[in-house]
Image (cartoon, rainbow, N blue to C red):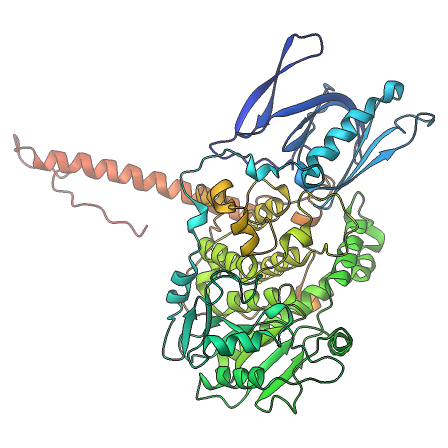
Length: 603
């Protein structure tokens, strides 16, 4: 969507100020048409351009480039178009046409974005007019390639809550009832010496010593040993996560690893088998043996059952999302929509991820078995499965702060490679490490919220703002690949948390239909008939797709809530006035109004 769907995040610290800039003739030009600016954001340049709008044709405008955003304002009287694009969203910048190009608007810049849209600007051919714009955009959209800091390190926003305090790992484990007689918290990884992509505190079986953990680490990819993610409050079965065992072509075994998995199983005396869910297709798991990886075989792990979940790798997911973008931007082909959507396989992948998480949740909820989850390295599909299963099992994670804790815990602290998967500030758009794994997880959460509209405290806008700032580089929340890298860069000291923005304005992100329920397990239906493309995210830039934002039922409900609050306030005022009258000494016989008791309301 064009102007209507422009992303603006107005916190109390975002000011719509006019930006003063000295022109080449030395005169201060006051750009009175307000350009939004964050504290720490500075204007680099501005230029008159033709924006080639894919929906409304060429629009003359002025583009402003700061160290955080590209901002375009239409100069045409019949168009109120505004584009507000954080530079972190830009994936690729290409020159369009040459000095000798013929045809109107054939010379300019083509910009590919990570959030399902492209931008095209035409410029005058005389005097290399696009060179400055190309160089400045390249410099500030890809700061790491030019030895510049990401904007998050320049952002000076202040909020009335500190989002960095939302997640305290020890407090979260205590909420789960840990440590207990069977599980302990170890700080063996305090200096990230055991595993440089794991967090410092880890929950491991009480009977496993730190030396046992070191021996197990040698047999797990990247030293990512099996550690506890979640424990069931009643039946005490657990979800454990790790990476693949280093079996290799020769079928190597490791007695310490085999014994360790047995110790995990024995933390619950009620179960006879440990269930292992390998997220990969079995053929991929077998192929991984050639590179030294593999899976837990029956003959080595006697008390374990292994199941493959057939979820494809990061490369398949990247290509699938590219196909989605092709069918949703700029044009949606109505006549072949269903077959086009099917050919992307995107919803098929969503289905497989949800199906896997349901299996994990069901196994743990039933008390039949504890579950160990891994893929290859344990930071992509593993994070999807553990976090979704925990969301299904534990209603705490369905609150706004609970969900923030879930993301901090299972994704950020356990080393999902955000920097590699998103490419923050990096110009290498063809990097094979790029993949929409976290987007896929958020999509799964949205699918669940559609099926259980009263189960989540947060609304759709909450999920969208998380995805927008996954790319924006405005906050430090999703920067870098792991906790150790964030500590080295002092991210919590030098940047602002996304949760500060959200938690300082929670009302905006609340689902008015939310009904808090304790210990209700959610099992979404993961069949293709019940899954749908998230139109308000994937097709939000297209003004021709009618979107219901906000949902009319939700909007009416919010109006009724506001009306209720108004009536309650008026009632309280009447009660106060009545109390004052009753407390005055009577000067005349009591009137009916003076005898009126305090009115109670079902509100």
